[in-house]
Image (cartoon, rainbow, N blue to C red):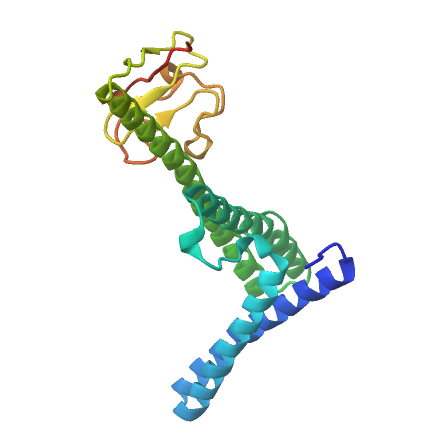
Length: 237
């Protein structure tokens, strides 16, 4: 579908928002009906809410065709990573907008209207959105690190197989420049790259391993800094 048509794009986004809101509204109605003893009406609201979800999904698929999975078995591991990474990126983007822009603006407006309960609710939601964004960022961070771990293990297995087949052993040495020397966790094989740092743990890009606080721990398995050792990398032929 051609999403370059701005009007159609806006209409799809509005339709997705409307169907999504209807889903949550009908679920709320179902809960009210259930509490009041109207079980048949509760069932009706729940069934309609499920239908609204399907409508919302259909609109979202048109908005984000890159996320449509028709046959997961036919996808490569890299394609799967790209799709889930995109999901995480969209989640982070949405939650970040909520806690940096949407809720603060709503809270300020409520305070001007002297509606303290609304202001408190908006500020509470802003904090929760911030927490959600950080959770998604951590997940994305771990996801990326795990990819490097998988690649590291795959390389070592390939090298071992090459030697078994009569090939030459690969020469590996640890780097000497603290600014680029990588370190690897002996417990889970997570690789710390000083160029990238570990922003989610407060370690800025460009931080040499020696400069990391001693109480820092592996973001994958929680091992202490002492568990890491210099990573020996392939020597270019």
